[in-house]
View (cartoon, rainbow, N blue to C red):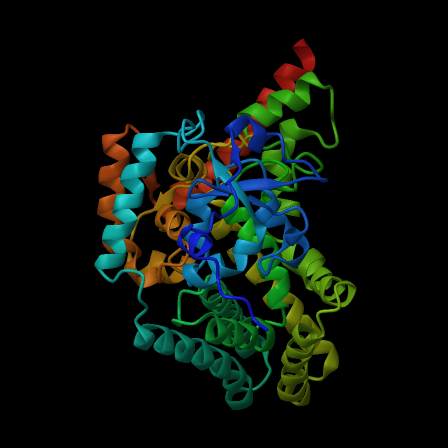
Length: 446
């Protein structure tokens, strides 16, 4: 028979487990391969095993091992409440009450004010997308794509129609690249599911590239921009280029010479803009999808090539089609590299110094002046500062938040750089020349 409950025991409240307390030093020590911790809102999480299951990839979350990840967590996750429920199993404790909420390397006042700014931005509705904008943008891409084929069908395959077709198809490819960037950042639809689905269509079917490859690389770039060893966009250092003042001097002192870096501003024109897409990415993306068994992405990619073959080979023949395809990839590569590098290569490049979110993004990014052409030409990546601070913000709202970001920077003495488009292009070459000279000076005088 069931026993009656003990009245004394019934009145005694159940005591939960005593929370474990940690210091920042203890967290910082867990940043290696075997054990990895991070902090979000003063809660300490053990992500050692979770990194392999992290939907955004193992590397992007590992880049914050041993550090506070509160601001990148907010920046990269749309449904934060749902994500935190899944994180409960990783929770191992919290910071000790006497521990500050910020590491010594981070600017507390700047971070507090940025978080207030983010709350203001959300209240203003600037994180919500205008679906008409993105629908029209998609339609303009499809129009460019269709116009490229119609040019050959109507005017024939002589030199001028062939050249016009290549230009139109290049514009369609690059603009599809900017649109997939929006979808990959979950900034078009209110749910991750729809963003991921349409992302696969745009990047896979319209461009022939795996969505998983873009996600794997691009979120690392946003997590730690211009940080050597963590930002894959600067992996060309030191094998092809010496990047940044600090890293270039390090290479010189170490007597490392993979390339003649003092001439890198010259050979950039040969192995940079014209070569990246047609000679590397075009083939590497297939290796990535097959090696990682991303079969759904591979299927989407195949539909892109089937569509091109069925529509262009009957008009051009296989040989001329391959020539057209190479020309398009060549033009696209030049367009893509100049736009993506103008905001980052001239900026500060260094090892990870574990700075606060705002300082990390501002020292690695700059803007190009707003204009109708610049916005279209760069896919609104001329607002790189705002994009990096608010990676899920729809691009059509960047210009609205820009004055607020400028005010925040002015108050805290942070340089907010914005320049003309051609000046931004020239700064890429200038920075490569300067870095190469710094390397040479350190190499010769060490």
